[in-house]
Picture 1 (tube, one colour):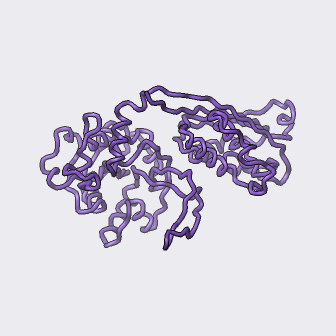
Picture 2 (cartoon, rainbow, N blue to C red):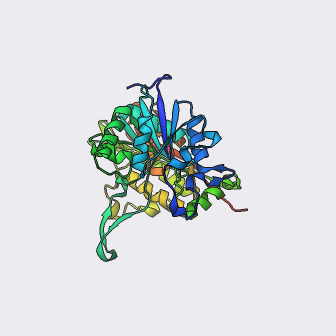
Picture 3 (cartoon, rainbow, N blue to C red):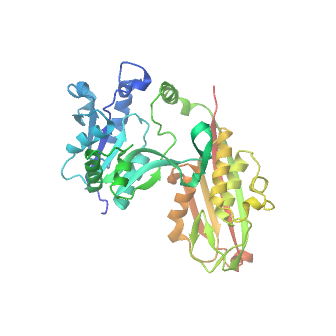
Length: 392
């Protein structure tokens, strides 16, 4: 299925719950942030998106009978007793010509146009896609007696967000499975159980879900001008170079690039990840890759550099820094890296926990000059911008 300007895209906003965990009589989706209800902010994000054709909002029955005036541009349906039931009822109202259907939690009012677009693109290409964040901390599974049972590989762990986007037929299968009595934590889990693969696209840390009173307070502080407070910004520069040898894999930004020669190193010799790691560590004044992951330590022998980068990101974030953007230049005579650029940017963005459009990877030759130009080595330069919001 190819996207086109005429593609009909429907957004379902799941707003049928009472939000009792916030402890008030007013459903949480009707609580206000900066003079607008949470629900209004959420619905407006989808109504304003150029690729969304219609918006359907599943509301509690009492509110659906007399919806607020600002919901005129959307279609309102009465939800069910559960989120799953509310989405199923909203799906019944989806236009027959709709090709892509998004499902979004009403309690995520800070969803961005970029996340919506990425979710649509993911569903067009893969049939189903969800926005999600890669975890940066070590994840433990705990059993009886609060004892650790297993340490989970964090590179495989993502925190699911919404929107979740589906080709119509995929969501139809998922909802049919739910109606048969199968329960799912979200529509993506039902689609998985129905046999459909689900793709992950980059979410955003700002796309928070308002569930508790603390979440609401954080959202109000954010809206009240947190992002407009003074910014302490720093720029870091990273550089790495490795010799090339026959028979070695060429790994760049966690992507294995088909090549006759690969880089020699203690780890997987990924010059892109090494240069980016040094750039963000340098900006945060948190040391360098040699201090954190020395090549004299057998723990890092053959290590995945994309994983080491994730460790560095966690360290930088614990210092209060957020990564704004990263730019990388790879110097290599051959092979051409253009066909792998998208995959490299996606892998870097996942490891950094940032949107892909804040990551750039470029490739240059060295015009036959020095070891790189003679095809004996590969090098990379990286620049990273970090920011930390200050109080006052």
